[in-house]
Image (cartoon, rainbow, N blue to C red; front, side):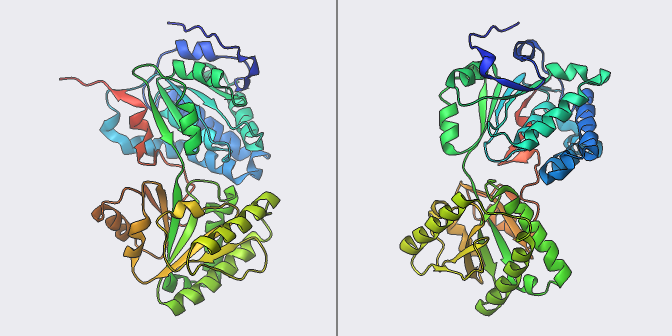
Length: 409
């Protein structure tokens, strides 16, 4: 049944397709997860990304293209096996992407489509070039005869904060996906959903890393350069704004080994970022304020010497229980030295999302989380992989959550 809308959508900019297709979207049916045309369309977009000169200038756009390549989508589908049997998308998903991670809109869109849904995605209102590039590529792909139907499979829109428009789109949704801070989630939730609809929320999270000092010390110079590149991808590529970016580094080892390992690691990181990263003035002010806060509130906190303001490190003697209060972007890190991995247990709350590691066994880390019954840590990944999107995020399996199973007895 076609739904009528009371809101004036003239304030909405349609990035895909270039015309208003909202009423067409809400009147169409859901489809099966990993539907053939959807998978083929994403693969087509991936090929175009890899060939597009403008797209190749942005590593995050290229990474999205790599995610959507045909072989990867087929492998993901295969991993679900019989769990896809009898499943159907829930209908229409409305996604609110975060303002500070440009390509997130495309990943949440892909998750919605692959789980069998029509999608409306509100991209960041900040005019990131990555958003424009990907939407141009989506539109170009949809010019192909076999993909013209995708114009009524999803919409990518951009609009400034408007409670009326958000409420109107929310009222039509079967699933609403909210990416952003706690404040964003609370604000969006003021718009009611239909009785059977529900929210998937990705609120404020805090991530950290565990480095084995002995492992770092054993790295050769070429290996250290690769580690620095990986760490850059986790942090500076997104100004440390991604929820998965580490903000606390826990060093495992003796005091002497930790000291030597830090010197080696941060030297390699600084050499890598100095030619690639420019610190925004507002972030420089924020980092200075964060240092003052640590000095006033954390007993024994020590700001480590630095050649410039690209890397700001504060060594702490104890891990504060309210560690998320000391987060800052732009290359700001708390550091803690210990010989006991269990020291991190008291600060792992439900706010903790990703634990990245260097030289530490992933199975050991997972065992620590499970056997300690910790309320936080949903992802354990090697350094360099924290920003890699997967369809299980923050503990949600997005394919299974955004689809429904039709059971037979």
